[in-house]
Amino acid sequence: MNFLSFSPMKYKINSIATLINRAFNICSTWMQFDKEMKFLVDYFNNNGYPDNVFYKTLRSFLDNKLCPPTKIQTAPKETKYIKLPYLGHISFTIRKQLREILKHSFPQIKFNIVFVNSYNINSFFKMKMLLPSELCSNIVYIFNCPRCNARYIGSSTRWFKHRILEHMGKSIRTSLPLSRPSFSAIRHHSQTEDHPFTHSDFKILSSTPNRLDLLILESLHTHKMKPELNANTAIQLLTV
Image (spheres, rainbow, N blue to C red):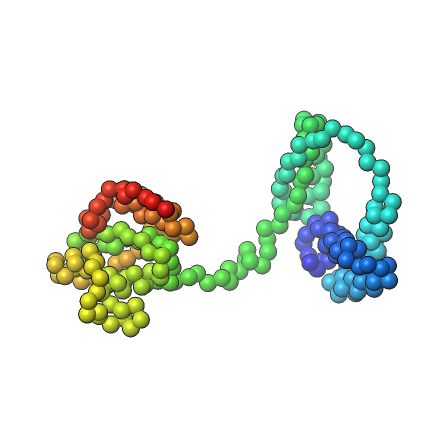
């Protein structure tokens, strides 16, 4: 995290304290710890952190480790977390006022108020490419006949395009017609009624990575839509 990044100062201080604590727990001698501190000073300097910020954090850390403050025994409180958008310095004023209100109204609860910043590079530029529908797997799909609107609902744990090719009676490797394709209610309807179909007549209804959830979704869609080409439109008994 760069020192000039739009984030609460506490987060920047904690990034220093985290690495100091790591070095303190790993280093077996003070000489090694001192060497690691010199490395961390250069590391944070390269990210825009002033020396005084690092050394102030280091001094506070060592004071707590070597001379820990005396803990006052109090009744335990329930802890609650509240998220607030980070708006700069005004956020700390809002947090202080909110703490006073909550402390007065709910003295038995300890509220931890944290800031979140939803404005990052990813929020402005969606770089991730969407997966083409033909390459999706673990899906429930529907077929609509382009001539008579007869429907069929099915599911597949493999690529969607492979299941479509099976309905067409074609090889999933070469896309050429098979001599003995497996039975397909869609292909049977197409040949019997002379209603040709294409890839565009298939649509994805739902998707889930869980096999049992896939069977449940298929049964629910089948029961609701009652597709004409399915052999049984009632909900099937599901077994794991």
